[in-house]
Amino acid sequence: MPDEIFFYLGLAFLTTHELDAVRCREWRIFPGLSLLNDRVWDT
Image 1 (cartoon, rainbow, N blue to C red):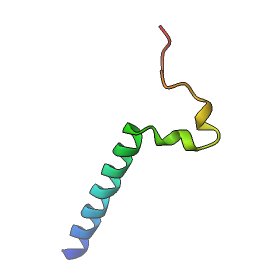
Image 2 (image 1 turned 120 degrees about the horizontal axis):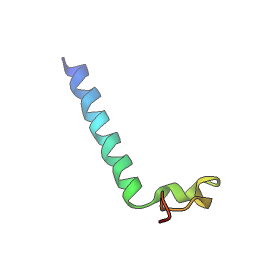
Image 3 (image 1 turned 180 degrees about the horizontal axis):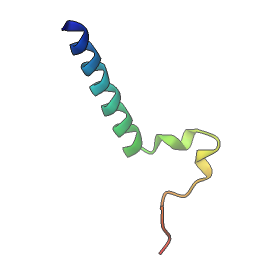
Image 4 (image 1 turned 135 degrees about the vertical axis):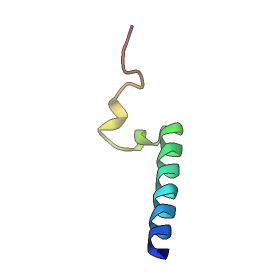
């Protein structure tokens, strides 16, 4: 039982970190991804 609690707690922290990284646009530090446009569709 305690192992499952630590697994879900770690998963929650990882998910929160990734959502914050998307909000702060941290993918721009990677060489290939920095060339991409932020917009998906240009309409």
